[in-house]
Image (tube, rainbow, N blue to C red):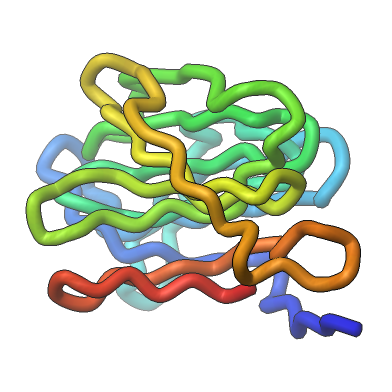
Length: 163
């Protein structure tokens, strides 16, 4: 049996923003219907801005190269990309039934997305909004045939995936 300890619903994401006075973003989610993206200035007293975006109900986010990447998990199956100002730059499907979980970037800037409901690791070209390669994660599956890959991190040329 796999267990996961969930972090609090509030996820703080540091993201310098030249376009706004806010220097960090907050992604909230209810794990069901929708979430929100807001900016804030962390200096006391905290100054929270208006909603920058509505995101999928079960979402995670990663900051990379000046952008915020929001992975819409569960039934959303989307990737959203927000610029430094918090404006949505791209939103595209990662394919039905995959249940994407996380995104990580290698040293060349290539994006990889883990999938919970399929035995796949996706290589994604964000600029063209396309899945460019699909790698099997089946060798790491348990009795149900799925490895249920989730959190990822890239360190140098190594990609680490929780299964």
